[in-house]
Amino acid sequence: MQAEILSTGDEVRTGAVVDTNAAFIAEALETIGITVNRHTCVGDDLDDIAAVLREIAGRSDMAVITGGLGPTADDRTAEAAARAAGVALEEMPVALEQIERFFHARGMAMSTTNRKQALMPQGALVLENTDGTAPGFRMTIGACRMVFLPGVPREMRPMLARHVVNAFTQPHRSDGMVHVVVVISTFGLPESVVGDKLKDITPPNGPLRVGLRVLFPEIHVRVYGQGERLETLAAQMRQLKEIICERLGKRVLSTDGRRLPEVLGGMLMERRATLAVAESCTGGLMAKQLTDVPGSSGFFLLSAVTYANEAKIAVLGVSPETLERYGAVDEATAHEMAEGARRRAGADYALSTTGIAGPDGGTAEKPVGTVCIGLATPEGTRTFRYVFPFGDRDLNRRLFAATAFDRLRQYLMGTLRVNGLTE
Image 1: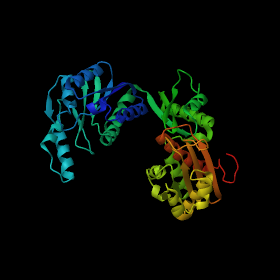
Image 2: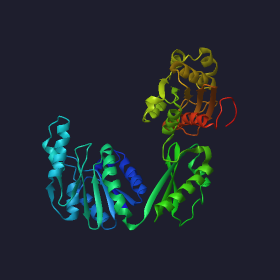
Image 3: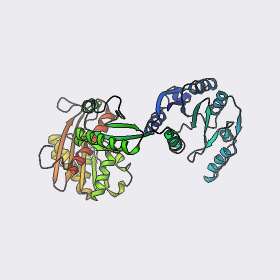
Image 4: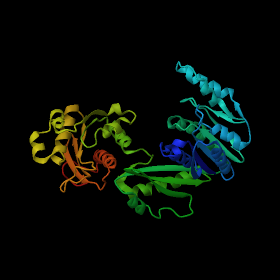
């Protein structure tokens, strides 16, 4: 099945809003074996939207369209769909009821402008939106099945899962083909190295193919499988997954797509262990990523963002002499920060980061990209110093945080020691 994605709206067309929807939709469709051939963006002009819809209808089996379902005058996607299909707009009682119910549940009066959102092309099937005021709809134009969803990501994503992924999986499999996608997340190797290690791992025309996706600072290996029998395909996928994990070794984070903070959180929860962090250069990023993990209250105890030297001394007990002699960005300081956080929180483990994220502030001895990391454990404390080649502040901070997390992950795996032995 060949699919297209169409994003509408002047704010997307002009770049005022970044179109994250298209990437999310494409990945979701790929997981159910639907190939996305094009991503298209068009503004709010009625004629332009209708023309693009007719073009898509003439060349694709399926399309997902986002945006333009709101209550204002520039929300014209439903009208454009009706024009492209050669039908009239009509008020859908089911859609109107959904909109009224949304406002009633929140104790709000529905504006008359919201009634416009119940206008849909004749013959369209209304799709429920439980998170907003814009119902979606589904219709066929030519031979193309089209799904129209709101552009707000927090509304679009659950609707995509409910009305697209679930709805299209079984019809797509009616041809007898089964599609499986496995995601193996990795950290610590650049994309080019991962690519080299997995080069020629699958035959060109076989049932399996491998692709890479960069989710900085991680690299995700995506294995796509297509076959007639689920059991056979699953066995082939398992065998290939084992080969990939063998080639990438300890750089593999998970074989189910989980990212590093979630993997680390899971390891801590399995051990009923606790963690504290002391952050300087990462500025609370580590705490944010850890608390994004469901169940993080079961393992995460404390974050101390001690940006100033005075805070390092007062909160973590870092020695003024250490700071005077070595400076804030040094392994000795990272050592005392980690031990101070572990002591202050009463945690099993603690991580610390102190570095120079950039874009300025570096020196010849400590260039931008330098980070010192402390790992405090019941067995002792170990520190690490790295210099990363990025001048970008955001990239450096994300890489600093991930590297700290990975030091603890490696320790919990038994592939890193704190007694001075090499990894």
